[in-house]
Length: 62
Image 1 (cartoon, rainbow, N blue to C red):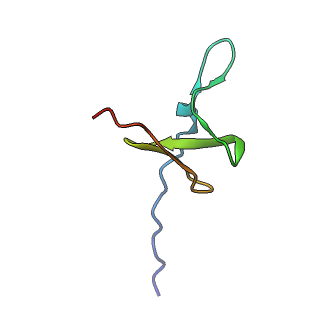
Image 2 (spheres, rainbow, N blue to C red):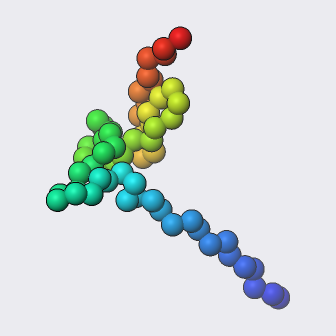
Image 3 (spheres, helix red, strand yellow):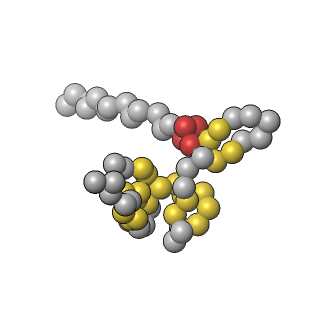
């Protein structure tokens, strides 16, 4: 049998959650349930934790 070719995964872009300067500063929000170190994903109408599923809905401006 022929071996299956695996897809190469895209590299993670964790560096986009930090701001460089004289010191590193974390620019993203942390999950209040999981604690420091777990960033929340920004969506159009909400922020969500990918680890525990905690969601905060943003106020609509409409």
